Length: 310
Image 1 (tube, rainbow, N blue to C red):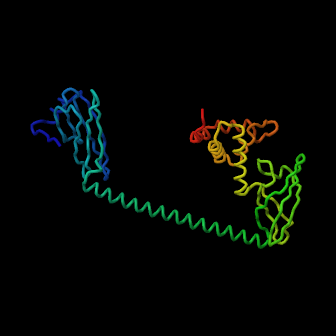
Image 2: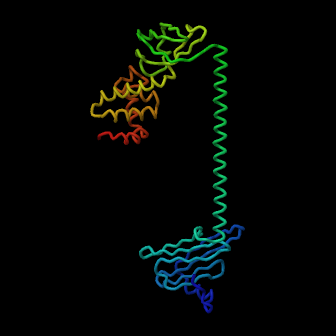
Image 3: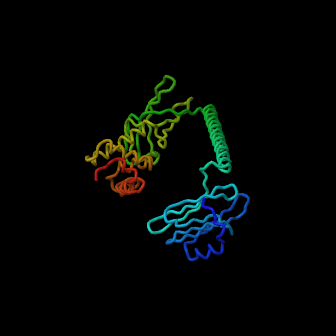
């Protein structure tokens, strides 16, 4: 830190540096007291003056290169930086929180305490979430057991053995094996009851809700296909896409279909599967919905990772 010449008064120095580069900063101390930090610097002479409120604290001469000055405001170590940038200078004022001072030691101690407090709060939050989740899961299982005990309803995946469709009517055949007994069922359902965008085929697997006491009372759940059926839908979408785009490798086709599923679920897979169909015949999934999907920004951003040839 450059000392103040005893014979140089504030008025005299101010007159010397008048009309030169001037900067001001306001510092608010912890107790609420306000300090005005000012700087005068001559671009040609390089003479520099720094004052705190009405008191000059630094004088330096011929400051024509990058330089910094440190001084205390109460217990806080402050720093003024003079940086040469070509033919001009840039000036900055900041608190030095890295050097070892009593104030910085206290600050680091407080930060560590806050970090520890944050970790405890985060741990407490996750513990509460975990306990809450366990309570909800147990309540769900209890409710399910009560419903099963009261109404005798169970859920089990079954495979469709045969599918025949005439108009909007679909004839299905499936088999339920329960308690060592096999029961074959033939059902006529409406197309509106099949809440899946894909056509039904032999070998498809869906969950069957049935009464444990009277298995003939049962219903197929098309809205929530099993994990095996989801994989089958993805495989069909990949095969259809590769057949229509032979320039792609299997990895590239699987990559694109995976993105479609992540963005739109089964609807995205259906867009790929029916990508050549007319909107008039297939209003929900067709060539238009496919083009809209693959031209959407989220799809394009992720598709770059598939390394599709231009």
